[in-house]
Structure formats: C-alpha cells, structure tokens
Image 1 (cartoon, rainbow, N blue to C red):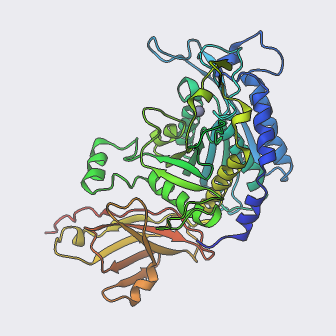
Image 2: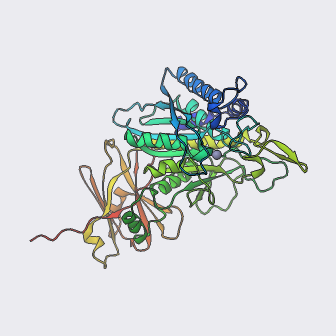
Length: 472
Ligand SMILES: [Zn+2]
C-alpha cells in the first residue's frame, strides 16, 4: 500500500528514550503482582496499585496534550478465585483495568474500534510473592510501553474511527484483566475490528545470545475462531478455511502494513532485513502450550493477535532476581532493547492507523449459490455488499493465494476485471459482483476495501451463499 505521510510523521515521533522511561518507571514499582492490591504493608511507591495510578496519570497527561482527546477509564472490579485447588487467586482481589478511548472524528466511522493492549502486572518465581523483586521489564512492561507510546503519538492524529489504548493486570493469574474487558466489550457491543496484544516484546539481549533477531517479531493468530460453534468449525474445515479466521486476516494485514511502514521484505525477497522490523506469521494461537490476553478477545468473537519477540530467554521471565552458577536470572531492565521495542511500537501504531483510516470491510462476501452447486465452473463469481457507512469513494480489491501459501500473493482492483477475458465487474448501488477466470478449487480468494489514499482493510473470504429453496 502507498505510504501515508501523516502516518509516517506519527511513527517518527515514537521514541526509544520515552519507552525506556516508561519501562524504567514500571520497574521502579518493584513488584507489580496483581495480588499485591490486597497488601497493607507495602512500602510507598511499590506494588500493582501504585503502577496503576502512574499509568492512569500517563494517559491523562497524553490527553491533556491533545486537547482532552482521550477518555481515560479506570475500571476496578473484584476478581473471585477460580473453582478448584489450583486457582492462582485465592481470595476476592481488586483488579484495575486502565484504558483510554480516542473517539473517531468521523461520526459515520466512530463506532468502529481498534485496540492495543499490554499487561502491566509482573511476577517472580512464585505466584504468591508480592514483595520480592519482580521487575517484569520485558514481561510485560515492554507491551505496556507499546500501548502508552501508541497513545502518545496517535493522539496527535485526527482519525475517523475510534482507538482504544489498554493496560491490564491479572494476566499472570489467568488473563483476568483482559477477560473482564473483553466481556465488557461484548456486552456493550463494541465494534472491535482488531485487537493487538503485545506481551514480551522487549527484544531480550542476553550477552552472547546469537539467536535473537532484533528485526523480527512473531505475530500469533488463532486458526478456527475460538467462539465458533461445532457446525461453524465443520464449515471452516470443509471449505479449507482453517487458516482464514478473521484473526489470521488481521495478521496478514499486519504483514502488508509492515512492507510499507517498517521495511519488511516484499514476497519472494531472500534478503534478510538489517533495519526496520519484519512480522513473522505464526499460525497458532500462541507459543506452544502457553497463552495470552488476545485469547480473551478471541473467545468473545473478536479478531485478535499477539506480538512477541523473536526469541525468549526463560532465565529472564518469571524468575527471582539472583545469580546462580554465574548466570543472572530475572526480568531486568538491562536486557530490554529499547530500539527494538520502538520498532514494535511503530508496527502497532501503523497497523492501528491503517485499520482506522481504511474503509469498513465488505460484508455478505459470498460465492453465489448457482456457482457453488454447479461443479463444472472454472470461472469464479464473488458478490459482496459495501460495509455499513462505507464512504462513497470506497473501492475493492480481490486478493488470492494458492491453498498451500501462507499469505496473499496476487491482487487486482475489482473494477479492472471488467477488461479481463472472462472477467466481469458490476455494481448496483452498494451491491458488487465480479467474475474472475481462476478456479476457486485451487486458490483462496478474499475481498478487501480500499480508500482513495490506498489504506486497505483486512481481507474477507467468501462463504457459499445458502442453497436456494426450490420454488413451486
Ligand atoms: Zn506476559
């Protein structure tokens, strides 16, 4: 997609020094265990509540600097213990979710929302320890810093749709903060179009580690949506759409954004990147047998992905700060790479701005039933409707890839199909239809919305239209 100078200007304001200041301050609260909200004996300026107070103050300061463009929310609730003997919360515990809402400037687009989050709680080797040193500089002060930095730079822009900047606690005990917010988003009908979760994006730099890649970030996305019914799961599998959940189309959108804004390589480039940042698609919900806050949003039916550094050092996560056999343990500030975190923040901010500026995704994207139930057609027909309140200048692109390919490989503006042999394009009000001379047996198609400046929405795959009922 073409670069938008206004987005480039916002990205240029992302500051490694500011990120370092944010993380150093979060580390200074000593131990941000969610369970410390019950403690009465903490030294002043330590613990999770002190951290929450400070984050709230940062959002308010950002808002004051943009003519009060943010609504800052402090949402405190009591988390009950989970049933069973293994609950990592053992008594009713107050949790505080902090979020800042930057309402879209276009009334026709403001209901659409894009959200970035990180968790501000930390832990050491023991879940119950609320007093020992638990700096959490990487896990997850780094992700919290990305969220705050996105708020700081994007609040200088005027964007049509709504952005939400979040910091949650309770991740280490069972994703409780994000579960609460995702439930609230569902109950209040938030129209969340993308959730970006940053957890462990510090770019750990253990001296001597040759395997870290400071120019790669993993993007984890679920396969079949977590909230799909058994019947919906059967349909995903029957159509070969197990790699086309809305979360995965969001992950592909991030790769597309990175080619324009963070120097990621274009398809088939075999040059390793030595500056900028390349998102690497990871086609699984999370790292093996582990979880994160994006899944709370997946469970409520929202597209959500997780960013994590290329290579984690497990001596520097969930560990008491200590030296043992000459090895330094602990999630210490000195292992964070602030330039790397700034690159991750740029990718997040660019993705949020592009999603915000792009027109609404097309809806009712379908293979018409007469094509679906006629097996002898090698030309593919796709129909769709403009998304609600799509601006008049919205146009559409058809994308496709071989079924075995991870990412879109080809695209064509829909209206150009009018000039292709066996191609067709027609529009009737907000109803669109194309024909393309490629068999849907061999490729996966998608349709995405594009504005006049080239901001693209994530693609939407066509589903078969219902079989027509026989008249008579
Ligand atoms: Zn974490």
